[in-house]
Length: 208
Image 1 (spheres, rainbow, N blue to C red):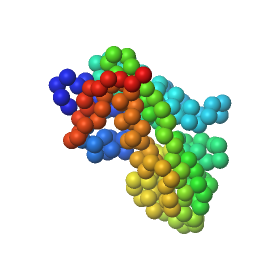
Image 2 (cartoon, rainbow, N blue to C red):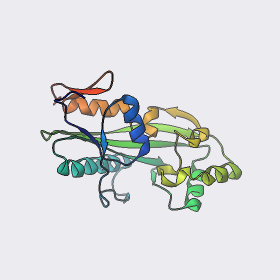
Image 3 (cartoon, rainbow, N blue to C red):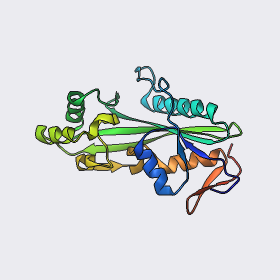
């Protein structure tokens, strides 16, 4: 980053989001949102609204303690027939989720939010359709045994062994990883920062 560019703070402990930011070559530091900011879905708001609200809450909470930084936050949820599938409680819950997802299409919504040192904030949602291959009980059991599903919404990670579960992706692949690159870069432009090669943010006039 250039000297006049504020530091970028990723308000997430997700290794997948760190991986994508590192791929873009942008310098950043990780400051996860504190416990209590992320709450379970209560069924009273739409899944996309829920994801965006949580992302915004994370960004603004971390921004309050890092006012001189650009703060980026995201929240990813998996939705099957209108029901949010959050992180599984245990292996049995992971098996149940994967059994429901097998051979069917679901939607991944990622809410993203950014804040800027002058108080500008922008947020939005990216949605991607994902279809799973048909899976039998032995395949599901073997995948759960890898341990990969236990800390991921919907009980799978497309960037790992979970790639073998997926038949097709309709939309942004990076969104399924929890970091919709195009959406995030558009939000940064709305608050006055544009991505420039090879891996930096440059100031531009913020969009209304």
